[in-house]
Image (spheres, rainbow, N blue to C red):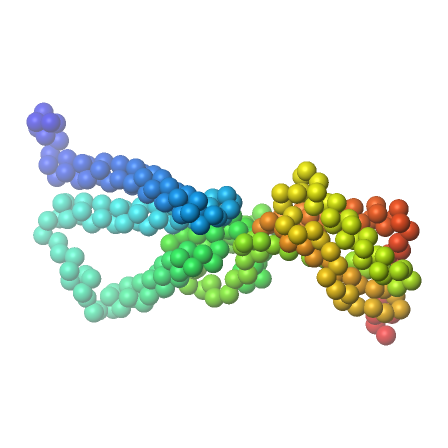
Length: 281
């Protein structure tokens, strides 16, 4: 160490040591925090009997946010420490306490940062949505890929990334929290025996729920919940069944395929499309 000091001046060696320690804390601290949070969430998940998918989403969300905050703190402390070592006479107090134009500008900027940060904390604390959830945010449907200290990132179904400042998120629809509903309409001819059609749909839903690939994702078999409309052209039957989060689209797709095959077999007639000219009259 003495030989190193003789070769490298103190004003270089000291900042270098701080930088090395900062880099170690930056990466190692983030890994330790992530591992600790994953362990805590896993223990709580077993205690409260969370689903495996919910535990995984909670772990990714909390570990990502906490590690991000830790890295920001380490970066700020390292930079300020190095500046203080190189320029010992400098004082940060006047800068932070300044009421001048620069201070006001920083104050207004900080308001937005603090608002985003606090909003992000409440999103995580209240478990509004997690990394991996599919949400509707301001008309944008997508999967949450990151919840950061300042912003939330969504990837929509076309693959585009959307960045939302946490402070501007005021209303979000979570499509995959707790459970989902496989819900869709079936338009059949009013000439059919509707009681028979309803029983047929219930039978198809029950058999689908017992299939090997679907019995773990269907909580309640899809059935006709109500007749939403009847006219001379069609009877519209609303089918609904409870599924595991984010599995509703898979169930709806398979259910429609099964219904088409069963309707053909049973001679159940689908409704004809409404002629475009009839809609305009």
